[in-house]
Amino acid sequence: MSRYPEVKWAQRLDKVYITVQLPDAKDVKVNLEPDGIFTFSATAGAGDNTYELKMDLYDKVDKDASKINIGVRSIFIVVEKAEKQWWKKLLRGDGKAPHYLKVDWDKWVDEDDDGPGDLDMGGMDFSNFNNMGGDAMDDDFEDSDDEEQSEKTEGSQKTGNEKAEASSEVKTETAAST
Image (cartoon, rainbow, N blue to C red; front, side, top):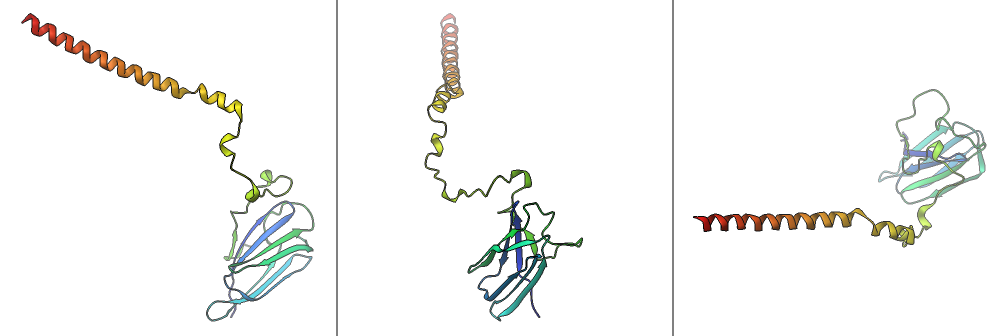
């Protein structure tokens, strides 16, 4: 009897990301048909359990432009869509999604957030992150409220000292008059 691996998915306007999470998979076979039929089979685990799945994707795909990467912990597939459009869901049909199929929130982007192409933050240099605004930002920091706060604090300390001195003067006057 075969089992189902956990499958995560996310999409962009032009592609679908499918991740089959199956550590130490052997004899991996992935097939993608232009009409959107996706099949997967592999063995994994101590007992060489068989894992299989067949998914009828929402729309047609570009089989030749799609890519697969078989890793140690998972199998990652980039499925290129035949038409650049957002899919309502991953699978065809009106039924509920299978229990092993989950949204990959790490890769998910909403329709209105998707710009031209993917944003890859991996190559960004964050070494100048603190100097984002240049000199214009430095001017703002010099006129910050922190200085006003320190002046108020010093003023309240002076007021406290003046109160203490006034209190001791009153005690001295009271003692002198008795």
